[in-house]
Amino acid sequence: MKMVIAVVQDQDSNRLSNALTQADFRATKLASTGGFLRAGNTTFLVGTNDDNVPSLLQLIRDNCRARDQLVAPISPMGGNADAYIPYPVEVEVGGATVFVLPIEQFHHF
Image (cartoon, rainbow, N blue to C red; front, side, top):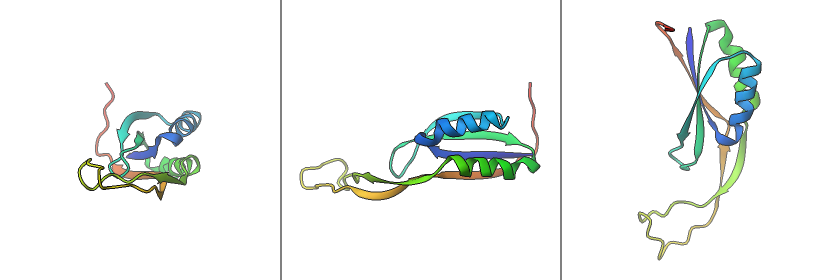
């Protein structure tokens, strides 16, 4: 048995959630915040049998895509923007960060 933890951008969250339901994967959905852009993310926790992991990873890959986005950088002076004029920077956001962990025991009460 494996625990798959997928951190996805909020824009992809509903699409992935619907795809997981249609494919009969049970998932726990948690709101989370990214550290780099401080943007909203959604973290999915999915427990599944080892032989289902490849199809689950493909499902995540198909429903979470990377995209370019302009963001304003955070002031390096701790919030004092008097002398700092931020220019938007194009960064790649989205996609999914996925961790696959072995599960030693599983209990459902």
